[in-house]
Image 1 (cartoon, one colour):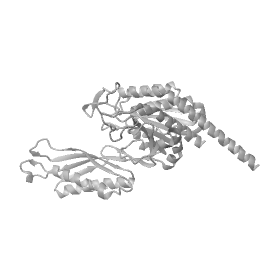
Image 2: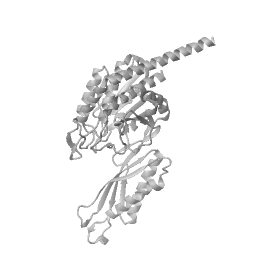
Image 3: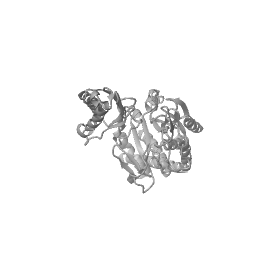
Length: 434
């Protein structure tokens, strides 16, 4: 009896492995066949970028494609968001896959024939528009994933929710958008999402490689505004003033001690950056006030709380010591939580990534002090956010153009790996839950 039971279990196990391998082979074949189409989609999006909450052309193309696959589509979520729901042939969990859609107010400088020449107005200024962070790649990859998985619908043990999200880079003051708004509008409900996966192309990681990190992966971010008020005077008579510019300079210098003296950097990194300082309009007038704008980055709630407290204390007390006054607003206009990869989920999905890319090509990465609003989904459901190589093979990461710059460049040969990774993680998660 025991021998027959063991034999039966072995047969079932072998059948499951064979089925898994067969599905993986299908994914790989279909993804490779779509590589040129993915590149075509990506180049079209790249040539016609749209800023956050203005992705009208972009979302229309995506919605039309999803509808052509027989996927149930909802549009207009969080202004221009598109969500597609694909119900598999068997019951199972709901897996969400997310791609962001918006470009950046950057004038493109890359020497490619599909470079953006789009101009628009942002914050009252005429700006160029460029996909300078790879969102064009993300959309094209997820469109291909939708095509592959819809063709395998009968074999899926669960439901896939395709989330095409606007405004990951933020919106103009006074607007709402991005992942936070999509969550508020119920994107993780009806059907209720069990797990969410996402990827980000990386211009400084070699094509063919995938990087990941369990736990805190990308920083939580708060922007901040500090206004220093003093007393104006003629520049020739500084003793008549309470100089907000000198006071601001002292505040900026003192803020640098937070990371060097208050944060335990052996546990987690942190960043305190002043990115803008505005005050005065003539060389011989000491102004009455100065405005500073900056960003705080951290990887734990405790560190976030510490940064906010110390910035507030240092700014107000330094100003007070100079006879001035400082007001601090944190967050000023936006806040993203830490992009937190659920450790258990990451461990479970690691074999899927390794089998897709090869174990030697799946690498643990250090924390990233950039931020991602994918974190708003991860606050509600377990999530895994991975990075896909986009740097030409043999390239130097230190010389590869950074994200958010006019020279940002992506090697398109790695797109099929992104398609395979998202497809295989989805199928493997479903089958593991089966």
